[in-house]
Image 1: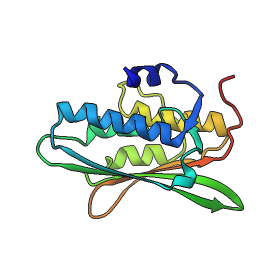
Image 2: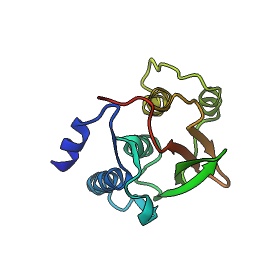
Image 3: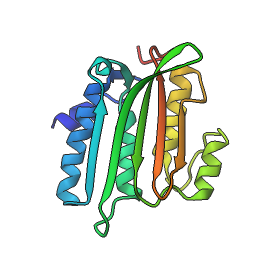
Image 4: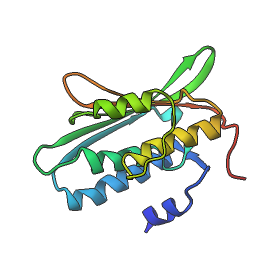
Length: 171
């Protein structure tokens, strides 16, 4: 029930990252019922960053994408969520890295996504990732806050940069 209440608040709202992490951990627990023993996850958030505000459902949407495209009953998947503070051109930003050891993104999707255009998906393919990209563009008026890539020997990296204060958010 706490999961449902959290999701109904979704919009251009921000929440402390620790609240989003708790929600994501609840989601992992619920998915364990459907995919027992299929996912190992680890989260690392420094205590001094727990109250940094991020868009609600940001991490959840990426984890949901992991379950849709990368989780199988055949091979366990490892998902690592690392949250740190970095400084880019004098601006402090929260860096969220979500990495897995799955098959990675299809090359065609990586090309489309990296060209910067937020594409409307007619088939629902990876619509959550495009939604994140667009939401960050609206809230922070920047196009460089969400990148995805494949990593060697296999897997993918989702990297998000969150400035301290959004320019636009729900009133």
